[in-house]
Image (tube, rainbow, N blue to C red):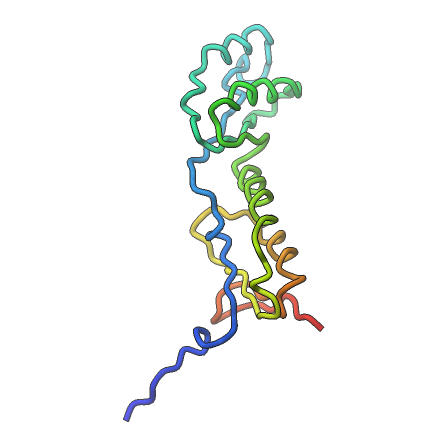
Length: 168
């Protein structure tokens, strides 16, 4: 006679906090300012402004945009701001930096709005493996937000979670 296999994880009070569940849908793109610089390094204001005027900004409609420079050019602060002003009528969100900076900014907006009270007094696992580009900063912020509520916090998967915090 075969013994029934019992799924102890499914029957436990364990809660999974999966950051992918909060991942905002939408296309992400980077805008590289170096494309509008002389040889990728020198900003000539008149030429720069002309490039921005002739650029098709509508291609960024409803997208999340990271504005950065891929070269070591020294860019005046107003240049990124001017690019942002051109992007703002079209993009969902614009940040200065990389795609990771963009993801960080999105999670910094989303995670404070989550209702963490459902995790009150429960053991919580912050799910580790992610198919989407969830930045490390999102995991750090999630742990901070969960700590006042959770009885314990672990990281990883139910079969191999690393304990991080336990309420005294």
